[in-house]
Structure formats: C-alpha cells, structure tokens
Image (cartoon, rainbow, N blue to C red; front, side, top):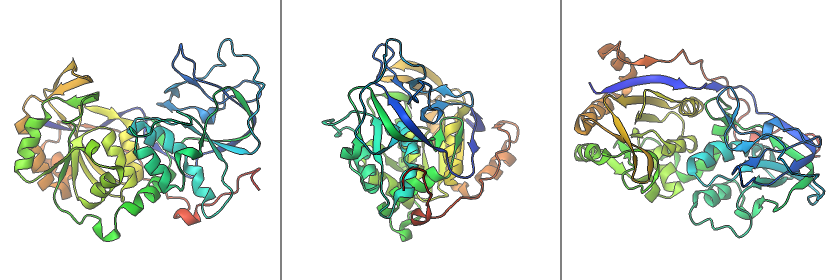
Amino acid sequence: MILQRSEAFYGRAEVRQGRPALRLVEDAHYLMRIPKLDKIPVIFDAAGRMVPESLDHHSGERTPTWQTTEWPEGQGPVTDTAPEGTYLYVGAIHPHYGHFVINTLARFWPLLDFAGGALRPTLLCHGPGLGADWSGTPFIPEILGRLGLSVLDLTTFGRPVRIPTLLVPQAALQQDDYAFPVLADLCREIGRGYYAPEEVDADPQPVYLSKARLTGGVRRFANEEAMTAVLEREGVRIVHPELLSFPEQVRLFARHRVILGANGSAFHTLLFAPPRRRVIAIADRLKLSGTYRLIDLITRTEAHYYYPVGTSSHAGDGFTVNFVLREPETVAAELLDKIARIDTLRESDLRTDPGAWHLSPAIPPLPPRPGGLLGRLRRVVPGLG
C-alpha cells in the first residue's frame, strides 16, 4: 500500500457552542495598511488598545495571520470622524478564494440577525475600495449577491478615522483553532439556491478536483495528470475548479456522492454544499491543518485523508512547493479501491492496516446547533434599536 491514512492534524479543532461574540466599540479607530510591514492594523479602541475580536489568528496561541496588533509607530491622534451611523466590521476582503471564505466570510455571520428587513449597519472593511476591479475574483460579488449585497455595500476609508459606533464580530472560524456552526449556517444559506433538493447525491459518478491547469499557487502534485489519467479511464470525472463558476462548483459538490482531490482551498466549497458530503483527499504530509478538520466537523463531512508514501518535493514552476508522487498509477489504483469501499472505508482501512496510520486524539461530537434556519436566527444587538 502506498496511501497511508492519516487523522492527525496540527493546531486545534475545537467546535464551540452558541454564537461568537459581537462587541460594541464606541470611538473605535480604523487605521491604514502599513507599507513597510505590508500589514493592516487591527481595530483599536479609544485608548489605542487592540480590540481582540478584530484579530485574525491561527492556532491556540493566537498568532496573528495578517495584521499588526500594535499602534503603528509614527501614527498620531486620529482626528477625522466617519459619517454618522452604526458600522459592522467585516475584516479584510481577501482576494484568494480559500481565505475569503475562512477569514472574510467568517465575520459576516451577524447579517443573519438582520434578515427580514431589520436595519442593517454599514459594512466596514479593509479592502480594495471603490473602483476596484472584481473581474479576477467573481466569487466575491456572487457570494455578496446571495446575501442581498453588492461590492458597493463594502465601505472603506482612505485615511485613519474614528468610528463612533462600531460592531466588531468575533470570527466564526479561526485557522487551526476553533469554529462555530453558524459559519456553516451562513454558507449553506448562500449555497442553497444553486441546487434543487432532489439533486443532492443524485450523481453516483465520483469527481476528482484537479490542479493540473493551475499556472501558479502554493502547492500541487506536479505529476498529478499521470494519476488522473488512470482515474478518468476508470470512470472518474476530472474537473478543474478554476474553470467553473462558483454556483457550478457548489452544485458539483451537492450532486456527486464522492469528491476526490488534493487537499486545498477547493474543498472549502464544502461549507456551501449540503451537509454529510463524502471526501477522499490526498495530502502532501501526514499532519494536516486543523482548519480542514474544523470544516469537516461543522459540515458533518465524512472525510478520508491519505498521504502517498515516498512523495518528494521541489520549488519553482510558479508554485511554492511541487510535490511528486512516487507511483502515480499505484495511487490511482488505491483511490479506486477506496471509492469502492466508501460506505465502510474507515473501518476497512483499520482492519486492513491497523498499525500504519496515525490517529489524532478523539474528536468530541459536534455540539447541538443553536437556533434554526435563516429566518429564525435572531438576536438583539445593544445600541441598534
């Protein structure tokens, strides 16, 4: 066997009950990107202290992901004031699909509370601003549209300003740390209109999400096509996600009973699909990011991860790391066998090779889901009336 099963993850994967915090900050300070650091400051309060809910972090150590948490050197008092009204901080608008979903959209959950005609605050963000070209990120206006928004609803300022009344939501997911089920609630409402209920699991043909046509990125299996050629010959549908629209990707995840691919951002689409998807993923290492486990837990995905033993790597060709499968045809053959055993895959893996794969500590069961569907997710926010 060349595929080694792994259930080990680095970081944490804690599913938290209830709703994330929503903090009301009076006289908040919104600052600009710091060019020499290429970082955006967090939101600060009137005393110049970090508002903890505005921080995007990874791991339980709360390591900042993209922000600076200290008042910038040389930044004097902020004297300009934003126009009147209540603002909701939705973080940075990330142009990368995966980070938009887990870093940006994770702060949009309060919009569930403003459904049905409730007065919605102004959405404040760090982003490209007016006149930005969204053609390279069509999933952003598409997702915003499903929330009844457009890119024109995103407010930015080209200078530091004071915000008299700012709501700062705790992110519903922090990488390699925790997640709240409300993120899945929000994303599922976004994706629900892209497929009919009778389409769920309607297509038995397995699908493999290929990176072969990407010209650049973080990681890939450079000889993936030698593997996918075997899969395609045996009836697996090969799909290149970047060639599909966002609605087409969601519908793909909904319709097909088994989705395969190399681990990566394409699997974040699980959040928008119906729950209980079945996934078989090949990974470039034995331990994966806890973020994958978090998404699997809150979407109730039945996920199986495998490391191809003997994988090598090199840099270049537009990717940070290129991984090379030692025996791509053998990997394909073993994937086909696992598809055939999908109904009892974990149990049969353990019986077949009980000592060859790593188990993480027991993952606690998903806590009860608070609230209900979109129309029932209500909360009174102090100061909004």
